[in-house]
Amino acid sequence: MTSETFVLTLATLLGFGHLFCVSVIQTAAHGSEWNTGPRDQETPPLKGKPARLQRAFENFKETFPFFAAAVFLVITTNKMGTFSQAGVYIYFIARIVYIPLYLFAVRGIRSLCWLVSVMGIFLILAQIFI
Image 1 (cartoon, rainbow, N blue to C red):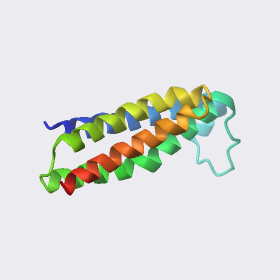
Image 2: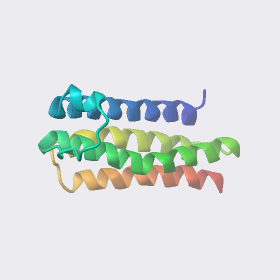
Image 3: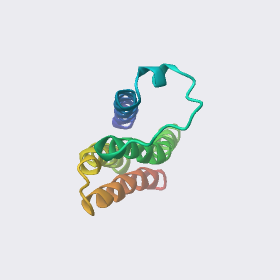
Image 4: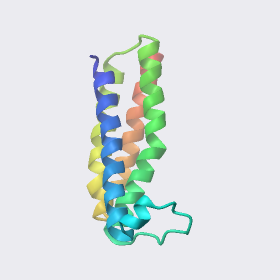
């Protein structure tokens, strides 16, 4: 298994971890009736750390498709190399670090961490042209 495939697998598992955590906090906040019901009524928003965890997941969902597409492109073009290997690890590590930064409302560094994760995606894409 290549580094790119391995980290794509880890990032997918990270996404499922996000989903599980958000599901648990939503059920804790709104109750199991809400979780198992049709959710026809507007759900009251989460507050505090649960809301931040939910927003961190939303942010992950915004970058993950670009990451997955970049990894797919570098693999299908058989252009894997140093840049793509570094890029996948940079993206993944930055996404892990991003979670507690968002959870504990660390300003500035959280945004920098997001930027680093996006730079990881661009490194993967750069590998295609090398």
